[in-house]
Length: 81
Image (cartoon, rainbow, N blue to C red):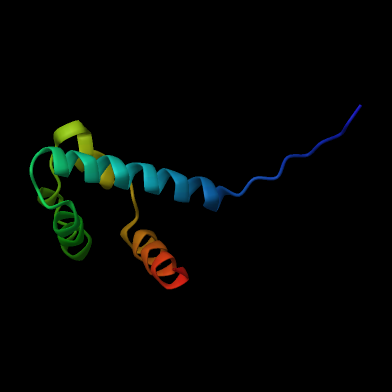
């Protein structure tokens, strides 16, 4: 019998969820004919949810993401590449 304790990282799970949400929001904005990058940046800078469409519940989803955490992850990813 193996006594296996699984380790997991909550941060990794949060990062995966953040990426899933951003991808959904990006796709919804693109489907509606918006420039997704400009709209997401506008939302991040202003926290005005009207930058994000309601299509596919994108506006509700993006509000689940903490903007500070999102900015930290974006900078981390940018500098790591």
